[in-house]
Length: 234
Length: 234
Image 1 (cartoon, helix red, strand yellow):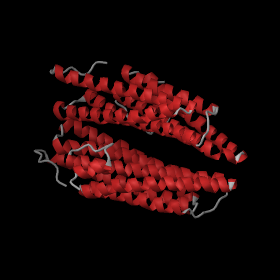
Image 2 (tube, helix red, strand yellow; image 1 turned 120 degrees about the horizontal axis):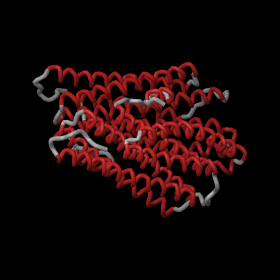
Image 3 (cartoon, chains in turn brown, cyan; image 1 turned 45 degrees about the horizontal axis):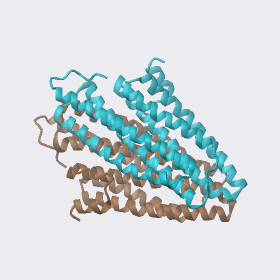
Image 4 (cartoon, helix red, strand yellow; image 1 turned 60 degrees about the horizontal axis):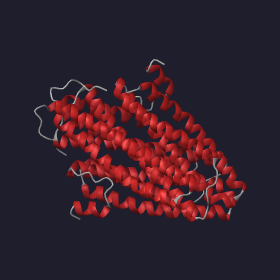
């Protein structure tokens, strides 16, 4: 990615720095998400605790990057794509922080499952959606790094599929609870984790939308997928 | 509220406009929240549908106000408290949009309760938390309009109480489900609505944090309540 031509090399360096930090934060959140998922699948309380601890670092990065962006706005008066870059970074940082929050919530469900004395139980739906959502986050970050609107669009498309799968998974769990009320507590833990995964998918989509805004200058939030595809000439 | 002294009266007018639109959006979201709550309490499908329809308007306001803020950043190079104002408005707009989303989700739970053929059932917890959360949103918006950090801090304090009550309400519902499995489906609908209310409380708190940032220039996100109180000299 090249920024606008600046008379000040320092300005370009500051933008580069913001991008670098965003990507570092993204890496941290991806790691947190993987840990949360492992904690849940293996009912591993140690990894769950670590996931929750890591959230502090993610939160600190949010505040740091926002402060960097504010400084750039105050001192450099960015215009055109530089301004869109700052706005897109600020939005992506918010979404990454929320993904971190949801990862922590998933880890907390792992702790509750362990507390209840339940071991790892196979929930096909959880594994499937979890895998998809992790890929979406990775691809969203990748599309930001490479300014790839095709990949960003693909994240939006995947989110629609995840929402449908989420609905099916929840209905399956409700049926299981009704068939065997002893399952209620465990099924609820899995449901909350599923809900967090679904939210993470939403945030990955938001990051994809920020990439489209950055590259195309078009705000596609709340637009229908078909309209966005048309706007991108797909 | 007075903005920084500007050589351009037009600049001041643009900032005023952004504030006016933020408050309009806030009013719309408050209305949406009240409707969602009525829809749920009375299992009123008509009001539920209207709540969901209203979300479109809220979403449009988000995009409009963000665009106004971007234009101000691009043309006016705001500094000091003007820049903090733009950042605070942008953040508050995101939170208001999410509150609107959660209000829609609550309305959807009302529709599901109606679909299942269930009538209004008294859930004390829901009414209580719902009332509190609505007050928090109102006070958060009020603190923004009046730049009142005491009131903003009060919203932060209330959020802590709501989180505790939420935990208790969820545990009560789980117990009810276990005692009477025929209640599972209905209790789940109430749980999802409670979850949305708890999230709305979080967003009201975020708005309170934005007000503190705007007035004091301090980013208090992720800080412990006691530290924030100390920072504000309480």
